[in-house]
Image (cartoon, rainbow, N blue to C red; front, top):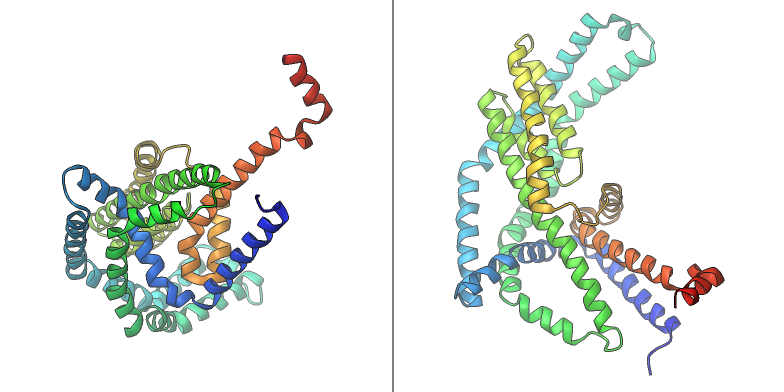
Length: 359
């Protein structure tokens, strides 16, 4: 005999509450494992493809790990030092940029600097914050996000976790499938398949889009001669998965830096703006339709809301799980809406009469 609905809601509610509490208290500890699971999920189709080519699961996982390790070493040797150097220099010259901006605005828009005006006070406050906290921001970021312990955990634990999860991914899915409650197993499998399809389209597709666009922006801006082109490309590519935000933030940052570096050289400024314009055309007409698809099921507003809520509550770990949780909730809401339209609450007497007349 199946459990009553009230009992099922109670058990699932308690399970969800325990999960959220554990996430709240163990966020920093869970981070390497969440990242490893995300990497394993991202690479599982590659392992499946290698298996169809005749590789064993262990051999496929080993090949993927060696290729990933090679790419990681190349990035460490070729990209990361330049990225860190540019980011450090950008934060160090932030006070100079603030002073130059203030001088430019004073020359072009003197009405903004009328003593005791609201605009003047706001600009002074911004300049003081940039000058006094620019270096402190870098130091805080390095202390909190790149301490020796965190670096060791991320560099050592994440690849190990990803390797073993990727090796046993199909077995884990089979085990979980065997533990599903028998009364609800078919519906759970159907909903899980929809969630997986949504995640596959978004996470794997948008991950590839972010990588392609970030590489394109970085290389193109560096070829134009923008001093911090690698940082701008990295930032723009990293947040491309948030609709429109990547292009807006990256474009504003690139054009803002270009104004200081290329003032009067309108050709270079036009090239910087054209790079982001072309990137948006390529993303909207080629990359996203081919790699992500149009029917992902994650509305931009819902995605931004989920990232904001989970990021605020649970930090970086919350942002990692925001997308799969948002996808799962979206699938459940659509399923609930479909069930509601089939219920007597929706159809009522008029719907019953229409159905009887059709019969």
